[in-house]
Amino acid sequence: MQEGPTLRDFLTLLGLSLIWGSSYVLIKWGLEVFTARQVGVLRLGISALALAPLAAIHLRRVRLRQLPLLIVVGLTGTALPAFLFPTAQQYLSSSLTGMLSSLTPLCTFLVAWLAFRNRPVRQQVTGIVLGLAGALALAYISPAGEGNSTQQLGYAGLVLLACLCYGTAANLVANYLREVPALTITVVSYFLVGLPALGYAVGASGVIPAVMRAGTAGATALAYVSILALGSTVLAGLVYYRLIQRAGAVFASTVSYLIPVVALIWGLADGEGVLWQQLPAVALVLVGIFLSKRK
Image 1 (cartoon, rainbow, N blue to C red):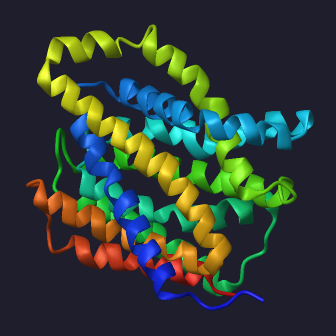
Image 2 (image 1 turned 135 degrees about the vertical axis):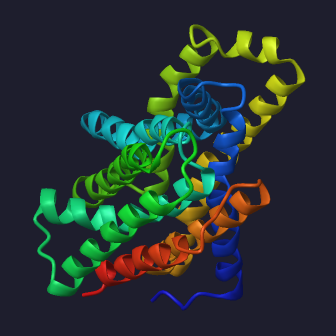
C-alpha cells in the first residue's frame, strides 16, 4: 500500500516545478544565438548522449515489436514538442509559453476522450471548455511580442499542439505499454528519437558554425540549451518517474499547477511585460484542469 506524500516528496515536487518551469526562459536565451530548429536538435541530441549508458541497459528490456510504438511515443512526447516550443517562442514570451503549457493535463484527458473513448462526465467537459477558454484569453490579452495579438493566437496554437503531443504520448503509454516499466519507456523513447538528432546536430544543422561565429555568446547559448536538455529533459524525466513511484501519479501531476507560476516569475525577472488581466485567465486554465481531472 502506497503511503501519503512525505516532506521529501513535496521538496521533490517543488524542485521538479523549478526545473520544468525554467525550461521556457532557457529556450528564450538559446534562441538569442540558435534557430528554433537548432535548439530542438541540440536538446534532443544532448539528451540522447546523456541517456546512452541507461539506454544500453533498457533497450534489452523491450521486445522488438514494441520499438515502433516507443518511437511514436518519443516523437509525440519529446521530439515534436522540442521543435514546437522554440518555434512558438520566436513570437511569444517565455512566461506566456510556460503558462500555456499548463494545458498538458487537460489535453491528455481530451485525447483520451476523443481517441480512446474514455467517456467524460459533465464536470470534465466543463473543465475542458473553461481551460481552453482561459488559454484563448491568455494568448489574446498577453503583451504581444513581434506582431499583434491575432498573430500571437496562431503561435499559441503551436504550444497547444505541443500539449496535445504530450497528451497523445501519455495515452499511448497508458493503453498499449502498461507492462513496460515507466523508466524503460522514458529512457528508450528519448534515446530513439534523440540519436538521429545528435548526428544531425553535429553534422548538418549548422550548430558548430553558429557557436563559432557568436563567440562567447555562442558558448553561453550552448550552455543554456545543454542545461535545458540535461535538466528539463533527462533529469526531470527521471525525477518525475521516481516521484510517481514514491507518491503516486495524482500527486506528481500537481506539478502542472506550479510550472506556470515559475515561468511567470522567470518572465518578470527577465523583463517581460505582464498584464494583470493574465492572472484571471491563468486561474481559468487551472480551474479547467482541476475539473477535468475529477470523476
